[in-house]
Image 1 (spheres, rainbow, N blue to C red):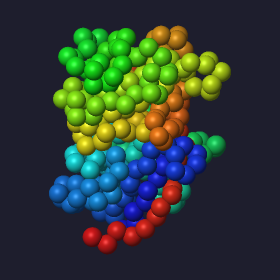
Image 2 (spheres, one colour; image 1 turned 90 degrees about the horizontal axis):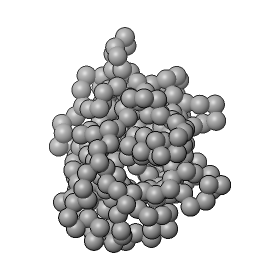
Image 3 (cartoon, rainbow, N blue to C red; image 1 turned 180 degrees about the vertical axis):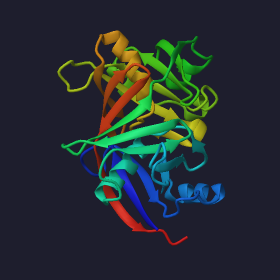
Length: 272
């Protein structure tokens, strides 16, 4: 099998969020879960995507699953973008692609500019008190905390400003017990002319990822959060610490469209 490493939510190598992608030949089923977990651990990126084609005429074209180095997750945006990019650049798909996933059917459409727009469910947002110790774990004063839908399981934590988000150096062990999946720290962009509307960083030590550079699924919660604040349905988010990327969001009620570019940086053969 060919295995690829794709940088997602960026138009240049060594930026954005890298994901492993394996396109499997079988149209019947996935290999054993233990094998999938071992491959993901070997790839050792925040997510590795496994996809296999489905019979024609169904509700979806490909079955898709995502694994961190330690566990399977219900939703992943950047690895979905990476998979759609591989399908289009290899000729395995030429039009819109529908993925059957643990979060329902997710669509992906390639644009003329090379960007890919994905159709994801919009997350709910529930105001909650800040968990004890969260501010200390982040090392920053908290403005507000919202819990997200079950298929995401993140806490969206608004901080005072962009500089605070960018300067975070959290205690990952302390964050591990304070959300189901992760903590998304966010704030408005400091400069309205910067080319993005809000910033974020994502910390996921509960699923084996201290920091995820650009988290597409988190933007299904960040989009409604900041769209309500700014009064606009189309926004651009900037995410990351050492590696960064941009996610364009378009809110459509119970669906959120996420758009980004991707670049294949490594292609090889999986011999296991």
